[in-house]
Image (tube, rainbow, N blue to C red; front, side, top):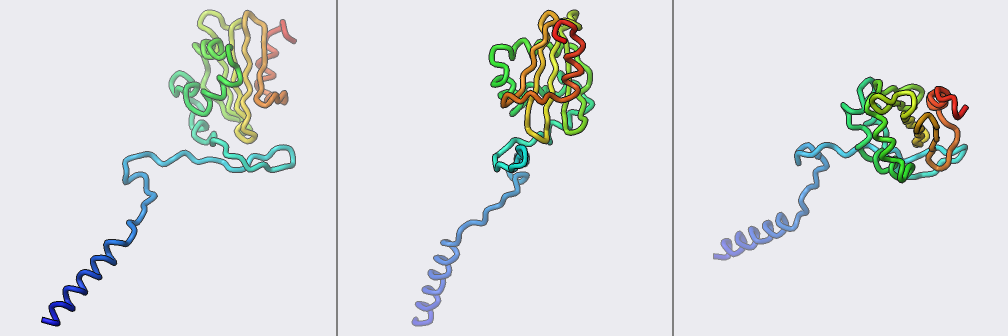
Length: 174
């Protein structure tokens, strides 16, 4: 009988030890059926100072090179969508309308670039988008009736070369 008491006590202790053990946590998101989270850059170089800030990586946007804006839905993807809205405010609708006709997206020297125009109004109603993926800045140009207005995040006016060349197509602002 003493042996049965010891054996029963041993089972109870083993059950308590195994039952109190924390479950192992798996970071494998594929087991849960979800896609892995997007990578983020944690350091952004500003002049000669490095400021640690959380920045959405443009790496997922770089895969759009050679494809069309309408095909990729690039303008509707975050973080680009909210940053365009913040930069342009009321002009964001006019900007999106000007990508009816557009060439493939280009990536050159860490700048993701595209331009477009309203169907039947190319040359007067156009827009251009340049994303400096290295500096994490968005630049936009909008031409309304041939008059160009340029926008840069953080009031940056060091516009990418492609955006400056695009602006020079419109004689009213040169």
